[in-house]
Length: 499
Image 1 (cartoon, rainbow, N blue to C red):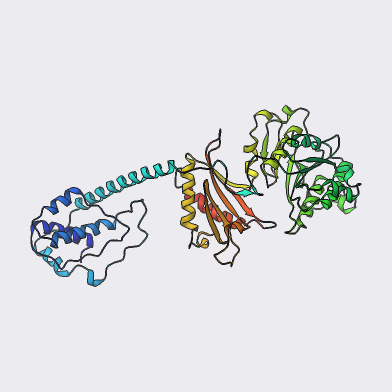
Image 2: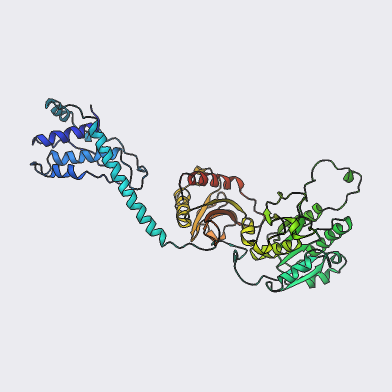
């Protein structure tokens, strides 16, 4: 027996020289998603043949189509999704056709003819790919791209303009950034009040309750330049008293702490053994986090800790302004009071929801605060520069639909938690579903966490594609393994394209 391609080519040559009917030759149909193309010269020579319809020329044409389809790629450049199956015995070419070809003295097909056919089809595929690419570019030119993410955090869009809610600034009278922050928030917040941390512990709780009425957020601003035991201990006690009186509508606390806090934890300490433990910045952070952990789902209290260095003698001495990870600040770093005040005010305005560190003091007038704080909204977990944000948005939307769309199991991609997706103007949102739930959950009501991919073209910055966390409810543990599996899969596929 000979291969189907060789048989088709032999019949084609035999049909051009002979008008003998070979009606018994049948060929299977090609997969429906493949559209083979015949060279114009070949079609013309066969059309002018003296043979009648339904004669070997027509059958040979079908054979050539099938032979060409075997090595042909789809229009989009990817292989056919349905694998071609070998035809049954009843559809195979009869042995007598092979015998007729051999009796005519026909030799096997030469190597030049298959190569010529491959070149013709390769040129046709390239032509169609170029035409498809042009159509895609036209579509993407008209595709909208949002200037800001579509997901909301805390009820309003990130970076949205408008007055902030009533904020209680808890600081130390005559020292630290507390009073400066009240003045900074005067024009932006609906109301900013000042409470002295060192006096709060001695106030009746009724008085604290009255001061904190209608406050939606707290800003705890101790004096970062004074780490004496008396001041630190008084700050901790005042914070404990204020947290006990916060109203139910207060859902966020921002704490200014010192770089290096929690660095000395772990191991055996002699001062703890002999009962001479001295209050440190660690204790202030622990007081806040312990209180937040005790909150129920009906009274959530989210916290953000901003670590900064000691105030410098002058802003220029502190160096350039830089925001970094929570535990990344150098122990000897310095941060000017003006920078601390601006970062705290911007953190409320941008709705920053993850802790970080800030250092520096020079270049306040040139600092791009939105860019400095953007990685801590979510927080951001992946970023890459792109040449065309519209193409990047369309790519990530198609990628999400291909691997995680309806009817697709996330488990096969290594993501153990089931997901739902929703397209946005700037990308796509993944939300995790509780394991074992049905498929009719409301997307907006899911609070098990997720990831949002956002394609952006900010003014003065390179276009980029970012991924950040979203939709994590109160006390929901971050699904780091599922996030990593999803991001690893995307990063691998993203590396194979140039957008």
